[in-house]
Image (cartoon, rainbow, N blue to C red; front, side, top):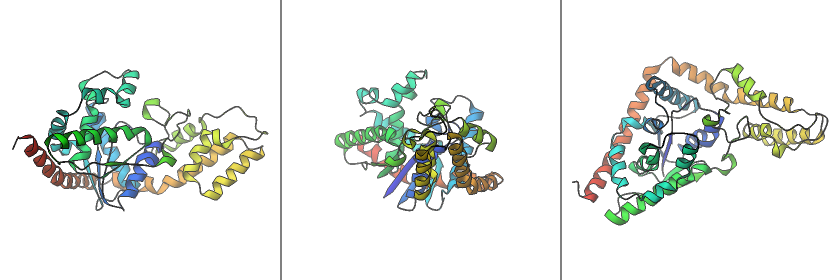
Length: 320
């Protein structure tokens, strides 16, 4: 099994990123050959500050290594350090129907948020397909809301193979339904674009303030509450054991248990869970040469695969 994951360096990583993508990707590195890239080319669709992009790339690298990514098991690299992907994206674009891209939810969603309708934004799925297909990945871990990107990749790969011959492996999505959508402090999906996130490695004081701002209903303290409709409880379940979850449910049902108390227990869980990762990140931050070396070696491993794929694609279309 060959696994490919990618994440944009478009802001501080948060709990939604961790449970939706980081944790599954790190777990999968124990099950097959793993490739994980920092999607800095993709980030250019929304990030136009060069200094900020450099900082965010560095932060993502630190975050993943602190969270448990093992460079010996995962080829970890910057997307921009593997130029073969860009040429492959062009070769894939010649078989990609406009209608396929026009139906992509991410493009419509970003337009609705006021992001300019550029070619890069529209062609984003083709570059993503090149990322996935360039290393001949068989599995792509994604959240359910990102499943369409893998479906588009599959469609493009099939069209290319049908037209030019069998060049690409057809990948499958790996979806974790239990954490497909992590709620933010406002109850919507946790997302940097909604400014509703709980950062993994952010300032502890800010984290505490944000947790206490989690939106709940107006049920009085003394009355029973429904945990299944509570955003704080939905987040608590990500960190707690089965017995702790049951105890919290009983507290909700009994009444006399306030949302403020639930949020404090959630905060304690978050802090305990991420404390070892925060300590490791602080150590890594003191050793930037190590981090850069990890990314350099990861790119070398990725390029060893992407060169083979690109050569096969170039021969298939007649460029070699």
